[in-house]
Image (cartoon, rainbow over all chains, first blue to last red; front, side, top):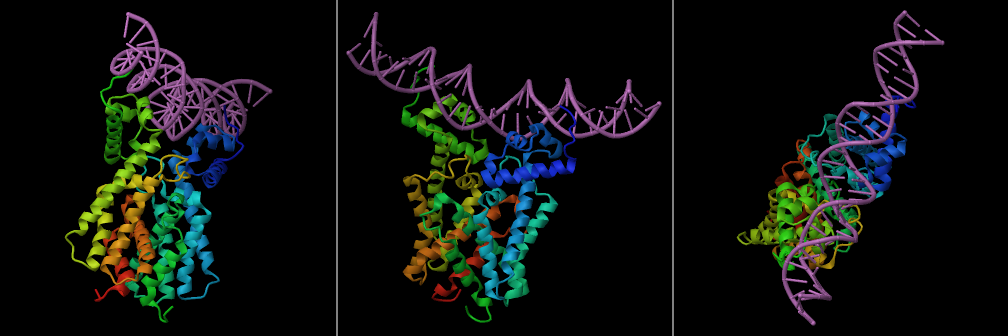
Length: 203
Length: 203
DNA sequence: AATTATATTGAACACCGTTCAATAATAGGC
DNA sequence: GCCTATTATTGAACGGTGTTCAATATAATT
């Protein structure tokens, strides 16, 4: 036991975070344990607690990362789409696609491992990023539709919540065959019905 | 140790299930442990495993119960409402209200404690009840709106998924102050936009 | 009364998150 | 080069978890 100095503190932080993301992505949040994490990076479990106060903080950091990747992915999917309604639909599809392609990471965003974290408030830096993700749809609505600026935020938040519900149920494998598959259809239906009044030309 | 016969097997099953529901309702799913459960009913932890194969089965049984109560509550909330759009809105509000008033039970419906349950299929008797809950909105739509019978199911499932998303995010205390409160407003907006074309008289 | 059947137990196993005194290796002063 | 102070790292320990199962005590049967 003792100072090895294989890595600087910052390097070690990143090493731990990387391993955390890796485990969550490949094995799921439930597979994330201090001992497994330590083994993966070649340190003892105790070392984690020198860099992070507890596993929840680590999960939060990984989720922060996931949020960033989600945002980037959504933005990227908009680039080559025609303006107007197509942009809105592309954004919704992007959200769903990201969730489908990153099930474990996406699930971890909303699954809370610990008892007490549910009551704790999210730190500011996390809330900010979350906010910017939610703002995405609002901006896309405003840029691509004839929507009153006063309605954009509320409508955007509402649509995002609906999209979240559709995605959640679609990803729950146990709910297949209860007519909750086909999320793309649901999204199409939702967007057309909710946004038809804001379209300059009917779809 | 030995046969006490304080309770018949069926009584014991109910005793255990009752304690399970009690713990989930009052302390949350995370507080449900075999040892606490045993203590609560005056039996050893091992006794549970004579009646149920594991805690997951117990959680499933409790969830089955919750589903039934959810359904009953929704139905009851429809009784004294005027026909037409009011019925649909009442149903949506009922779902939200049940979730709000039974946070721990409702959360348990969608939070999976164990690693492997996510992959297992739900038993038939559970799927049936789940189905009948999802069918609720479809029936209410068909009885109260001018909706083509071919569209009722898909629209109903879609609305239910959206409602679920709104409820999920609204109940997440950590997401307050990101504009995801006010679920009633969201529900109103969703229903009006999605159902306006099916209304005989405009709202 | 002896035997069979069954209900109940609790110690045991392999995990978990977290803590912290002990320790080993480095950095700095002389 | 030596000594000391600092710091990074450890791993055993604590109190928990779900689950199993040989042992046992009671009831039912013969």
